[in-house]
Structures are given as C-alpha cells and as structure tokens.
Image 1 (cartoon, helix red, strand yellow):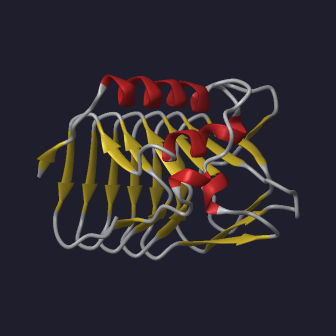
Image 2 (tube, helix red, strand yellow):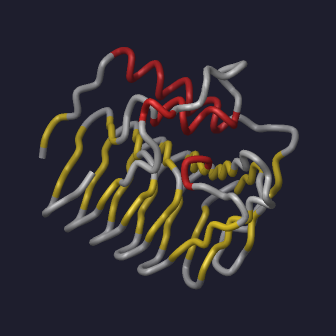
Image 3 (cartoon, helix red, strand yellow):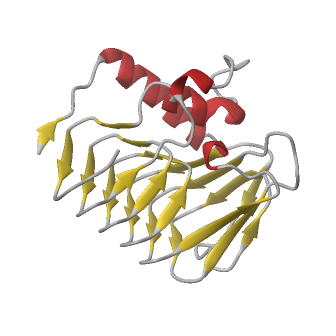
Length: 195
C-alpha cells in the first residue's frame, strides 16, 4: 500500500471535473438501475440511486456520429458483476465514456468497463477487472489480483481546451490527459497489476 501524492493542482482539477460531471443537465435521460442487456446512444444518463450491471452485455452505439459522448451519472454507486462486458459500435470509443458517481465503483472479477470513472469516494477492482480509461477517486483505489487500468488514448492526444469547464465532451480527456490513476488517500495493490 502506498500513500497517493495529492497536489493542489490534482485536487482542483479533479474536484472541478467531478462537479461538472455530476451536474444536472437539461438534456439528461433518466435511466433504470439495472443496465444489463440495454443499448445506449450518445447522451447523458442519470440514475437517482445506483447503476448495476448484473449480467449480459451492454451496448454503446455511437450512431456513426463524429465524436459520440456517453456520460453516466449515479447519485450513489456503480457495480458490475463478474465477467460482464460492453460492446462499443458505430464509432463509440472508451475515451468518450465517463462514469460520474456520488459514492463508489466496484468492478467485478474479469469484468471490462469502457470509460473513465470519477468517484465521490472509492473505486475497487475485482480480480482481473479492467477499466479502459482513468480511475480517479476522492478517497481510495483498491486493486485485487491483476486488476488493471488501460488508458485508451495518449495524454498528448487529449482534446483541445473546452469552451467551458462543464463541457461534457471534454471531461474525460481533460482529466485523463493528466492522471490515469489517482486517489486522495490511498492506492492499494493486492497482487500483480498493470496500469
């Protein structure tokens, strides 16, 4: 276990992006708690409580838009069951998916989640769970054996500066261009990892 070094720049950057990601937007779609088997098109989706992925496959359909963005907001948690997967099609890319959570994320063993997580508290990776994006938590990030963070785009490829700090299109790039893995308090590794 090691202490996460948190600079004032990190704190300001992550807290600003977190607030922007959690903001209520006029074009937000209400979503069910369980997302297994559903298909989502570009847009902002909000759960008044949690987001659960118990079984099956979730599809993100970019509709062949030039830069399709998916923002998922939950006032509490995101939980994915073991071995759950996503299908990204018609231009959907992990780098344009963002999960903004009021509290914590728990990724089940062998599950794969596209996008970056901004968690109000913690992010926990099950054994061999994979996040194709950045993991940014207000308190802690914990990895079980062989959990991994895969940054789907290089920092230098980040999007141009956004017109405003609340631009959904820029949030994932803005944060991940600087940090791939960060926590306010601790980052804990329980076994071999890759980041």
